[in-house]
Length: 151
Image (cartoon, rainbow, N blue to C red; front, top):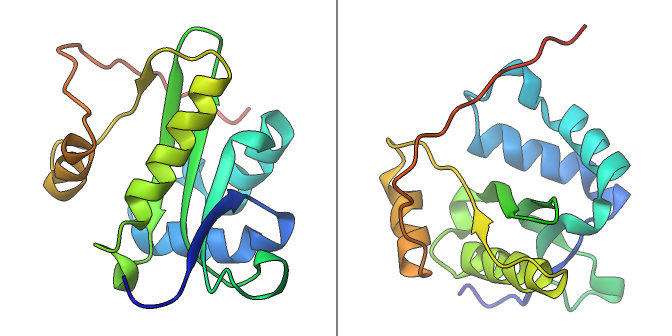
């Protein structure tokens, strides 16, 4: 790790600009439905307690500092899901992604969740390797999706 302390904490409204910028950097080809500011608004309206950031320089007053990672989670009472894990490119391979994932899993487990799912694009070998190193295994399933219109 680079020397500065990294803290995983709940998202705060003041983090919105930094998280939006992080997601734009990490997911440049995301479809319009994943526009970062709109995603943040929807998450805050639904279950904001399942939205975390990793902050470098967390030893600053009140845990302020630079947002270097973020992750969303969801839980419907049956399964948990992780979404949009992102770590600043210049801070990768420092354990930040691992810390975010492990934090999310602990929080979901505390809610009664017994299985957590996530989806990774097949072409993203580095992220698949990260999750494999954390004990995740491929489910032999077919993922189906349906995009709903904005109207």
